[in-house]
Image 1 (cartoon, rainbow, N blue to C red):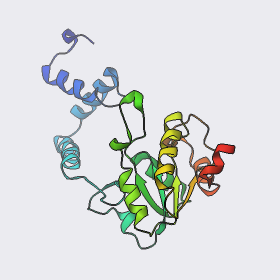
Image 2: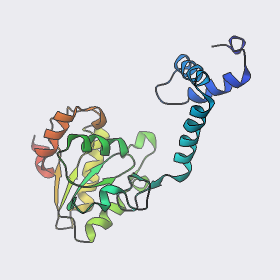
Image 3: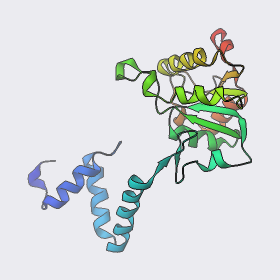
Image 4: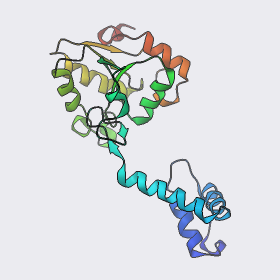
Length: 208
């Protein structure tokens, strides 16, 4: 959209910012901005305050690295969760995906990404060492590697497996009900839930 099509620099600036959001093109950004302009000022102020407060005050759980309002997230702080089982996921969206299955009752560990040399992401850029430290404390009996079944995900799985091999801990991986190449967050809840329940020993997954 050309600059001459905008009747306001303020409108243009707002559209430019919305267009930076993932999956939002300039036409969608314009619709969103015009929608906000039609709303009462108080509602728009609530919207902007919520976003600003989120960015300024959000925390990351010091145990699992999930987003949280406090230093320790509600999942890690819950006495009803099984602290002997830790599910390793790539990102925060994957925590939500697994939680939606209602089939997992342990704790999580969010890596913050996966190993991807093409993108310049190595093991030191992820929360792998903190996972090793958690396992080294002796409370964890099983680590479930629940990364997306992509080449990068498998590479990360194998790296973590090698790092955790010296410890007396069971290492499993989600069953291949999630198709190879699929992103975990896009798997339907039933398929993902079955993949969690039917998890296999990691070393055996190479034989599948």
